[in-house]
Length: 227
Image 1 (cartoon, rainbow, N blue to C red):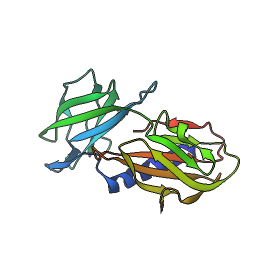
Image 2: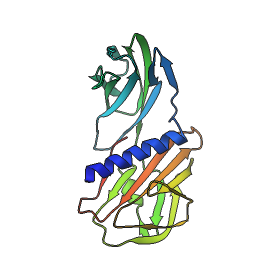
Image 3: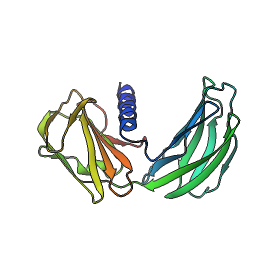
């Protein structure tokens, strides 16, 4: 059940994020093959989960070949699945090493691709994140997604978020669908509630998301490092 809920949260986050921004990427198509020109990942302190980049194609025989990483000190890149389980997707395995920008090239579906991978050191973008009298600010010190489990009572109050300089709130959604404004009243239920907040950097236009999941489920509260 815990894994299913996490998958749902991640899928919803991805769907909503697409509606807001393409995170600085541009879709290109060649020979029915789709990929983005760049991708951003966080470098977390003390935790370094593996991430993936996928290439979609209509060519069931396509394979990723001639992979070259021009900045191996920034990120480690390898072929995870050159063809994909259904012959429609190739996948690269990405391991961030330090903040910076890496150039990666490879050949796929008869085309040569140049890809930019941007690694940014994670920082808590919230100076304050409160619901009523409950302060969740420090929950986002390690990552932008936090699962607050083993809660004994519902919380009803106004959401009060203050972001660091150069960041502004784009949208706040509660329980997957309801859109609210900052300082609006809401209820976090032990039966399971969530807050998806999307914020944009005023200078760069980059959009990030901050996610809080609140539940009485008997699991250990923890951060998630999915992005």
